[in-house]
Length: 62
Image 1 (tube, rainbow, N blue to C red):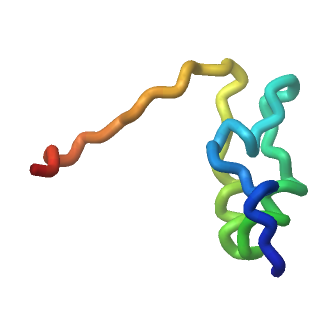
Image 2: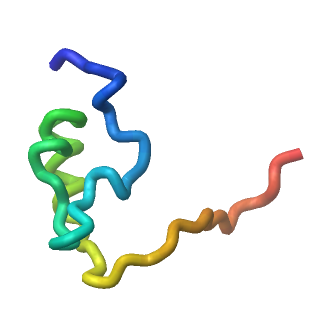
């Protein structure tokens, strides 16, 4: 698979259709290996859009 960095999504939100709240399957299959794409497409999406935020429950690095 040839990669074009200019077209590679940099945020998960770019892989979700904001109107239908469904995965952009073509983009996912073009960006990831077949196995990874299938695992991503198994992740359910919320029908309600949420503002992005960072979630980290681990320890802070020093």
